[in-house]
Image 1 (cartoon, rainbow, N blue to C red):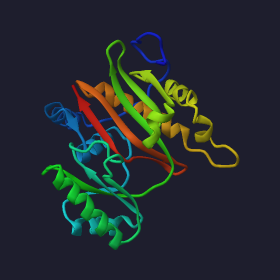
Image 2 (image 1 turned 45 degrees about the horizontal axis):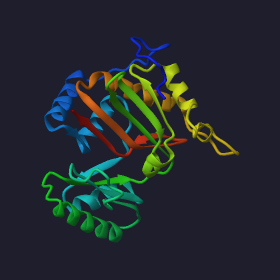
Image 3 (image 1 turned 90 degrees about the horizontal axis):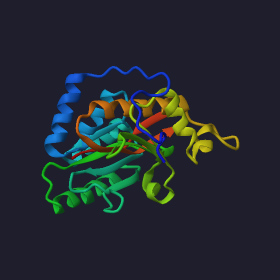
Length: 247
């Protein structure tokens, strides 16, 4: 259910102050509106513009570039396809995890490069990312016909639609409301820390929700967006995959 039963004009409590490069945001939004979608480097750059961290990555067009990025990041790495033709990477086997060596990366790159050729996406790239572990969350936006832009947060990863542990709040979202959203999740006790296991930085997660809310206010015409997963652990949080869709 939505955090409020009716639309609001102002959030309840103090809002997070966020500075953004307005010109860059306008450029990204115009690109998204023209193409109806924003993925890859532009999607990551838009997130970073709002202070949402992105996992260390490199978009590559050759095996040599992939190896250079992997050596720079250090193994283990993840290798995945970045293409408008392939939005569900797990189902299409467009992502390879736990790559520990040049040999494994060479095999993964070859298979993913063939996948890109099969969908005839000349603009598609292969993404090499530092592999990090932690809780997988979903953080996104969705334009509701009745309430307008809504922030969505909850259980992420490949089981998002299985567990359906999701909370929503109407934009703009205050700091207090973002904490309320987190506390309403079934996974909240795990995020807070249970049975001697250290929890995550809940203030940082609250901050990410507020930043996504701000993005929703600035991104004119945006229909929906999602970071899935947003990986969070005791050291921080990082967007691993992101997409933005316009009407």
